[in-house]
Amino acid sequence: MIRLCLLSGALLLAGCQAVSTDSTRQTHGHGGTEQTSKRLYPKSADYASRKAAGRETRHSADERPQASEAGASQQDLWQYIADSMELEIPVDHPRVVAQRNWYLKQPEYMNSVTERARPFLYLIKEEIEKRDMPMELALLPVVESTFNPTAYSHGHAAGLWQMLQSTGKHFGLHYDSWYDGRYDVMASTRAALDYLEYLHKFFDGNWVHALAAYNSGEGRVQRAIRANERHGQATDYWSLSLPKETQNYVPKLIALADILKRPGHYGMAVPVIPNRPQVTAVTVEGQVDLNMAADLAGVSRSQIKALNPAYKQTATSPLIDAEILVPVRHAQTFELAMADLPAEERMSYARYRVKGGDSLGVIARRHGTQISAIKQANNLSGNTIRIGQTLLVPAVSASAPAAAQPSTYLVKAGDSLSVIASRFSVSIADLLRWNQLSSKHILRTGQTLIVAANAG
Image (tube, rainbow, N blue to C red; front, side, top):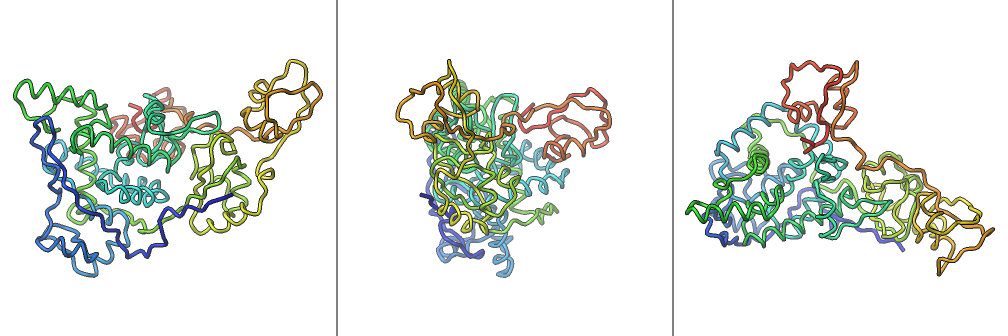
C-alpha cells in the first residue's frame, strides 16, 4: 500500500501565500531584556489588515514595494521567506556586520547554496509554516551545512541540520545498517524543528537563546545566563559569554536574513527559486530497491540517490516504511507503478543454500542485510533454519554511506580549489571560509583542507 504525500498540502499556485498567526513571544524567564515579541523589520500601521488580505508588506514602511514587485516576491521562494521573517535582532551589531560583510564579499556563495537548496527549501518552508515557527529557521541549514544534505563534521554531526546521532535518536530519528535518518531531508527537518521547539520552550519563549543552544547545547547557554544573573548583568544573547563559534552562529543567520530582506540595498544578486514544490515524498511500505524505484519513476538513479541520501545501500530499510523524494512531475508515475508492483517484486533476491554453522544472523551479516528482511522474504515466523534449505536473500549493492564523506582532504599534485570544490560539492567560497584562506592562496601538496561544513 503506497501513500502519496504531497508535502505541499495541495497544489499551490505560485502566487498564493500561507498566512500564519502572529503569536506573542514571552521575555526570557531568567530576567533577560530581549523581547522576542518584537519583529526584526517594522511593519506599517495597516500590516494586520494587509496580512489578513494576503498582501503582507515586504519591507519596512519606508521601503514598501509597488504592487508588481509584491506579486513577484510571492513567486520567489527566497523573497517569500524573507518577507515572513519576524524576529527582532540588531542588524547593526558589530558581529552581524562582520558576518554580513563576509557574505557580501563572496557573491558566489549564495549561488552554490541556492542550487543545493533548490529541491528542499520549499518543503522546509512548509514544515515551518505548519508549526507557526519563525521563518528565520529556514536559513539554519545554510549556516549548518551550506544546504549540503550529506555534510558530515569532525564532531560527527550530519545532514542538512547537522544533528548528532544521540540528539536525532532522542527526537525520533531512526538508524540501522541500511538507513541514517540524519541524512533524510524530511525526517531530519521534523526532528530539528522538534528540537528547536523544545529549546524555545526550555528558554521560556526566547528564540535567540534557543538558536544559540541549538549550536552549543541548552546547558551551556543556561549556565551563561545564570552567570550573568549572579553578576547583575544583562542576560540577552548578545551579553552572554559563549564559545566563539556560538557568538558568531546567530549573527551568521541574521546577517543572511538581512541580505535576503534587502538584496537590492546591498547589491547582492540572489538566484531565484520558484515558490512551489520541486520534489514530493512518496511513502512506500516495505523494502524497495532504489534503482528499481528510479526506473519506475522515470528519473536517473543518481538523482534518486541525491534526493534520498539517508539510504546507505541501493535499497530502503526493511525495518521502516520509506519516504522517497522524487521530482513532482514524476510523483504520479512512480506512485502508480509502485501500486502495480507486488511487494515480493520490489527487491532483487539472491538464492542462498544454508550450510553447517549458518544462522540467520550470520547470513544477514554476510550479505549486508537484516534478519527481519530475510524472514520477510521467506515467510519465516521464527529463526530456525536447516542445512540444505534455500533462502531468498535481498541482493543489494552497497553504496558509500553518506557519513563516509570525509571532513578533511589531503591536497594532491594537480589539485586546485575549483577541482576540490567540485569533488566535494561545495563552493570555492566554502573552502576559503572554512580554511581561512585568501582568494590568492596557492595550494601545496600535502596541505590539509577542511572540505565539509562544521569540520573545523
